[in-house]
Length: 211
Image (tube, rainbow, N blue to C red):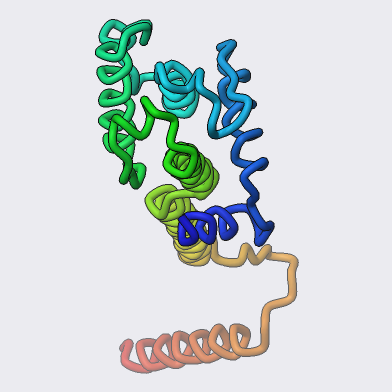
């Protein structure tokens, strides 16, 4: 029981958990589910029929109780059936249960407190697990971001490549348009003058060879 209280303390941000805290939690849980059962204390004789604990279990996990097998708990036999079913359901959830059906039927105060605290601890564990993001979701987000960055990088590379190709095409297909009236660069003038001299020299040689 001491270890169970320590576990509850660790789940309540270091706050000391008292018997009254556990009692109030159980009553509030049942009330919030729309049920009317309440327990006055952990030695409340009305707990012997088991109805309150079945409603508490149903409050923390609605689908866990099969109400078609629950009795009204009016006879000792019915009370034992309910008490046995309570222990079975609590263990099915994963609660640490060490009491016997007779402990519920006779309303053993210490064991009733232990049962209630075990259900409370299990419920708080589920609440913590639901509030934490799973690693799979985190990986999905990370992978999606990486894929997006890669795609954007490829788009940028393609765009730069296309720009380079376009620039090359224009450099080859569109040479500078030099008009007749525009001044030619010095090396172009020299080349034309040299060509003219060669042609003139060739003509002079041909003229000297004529009879």
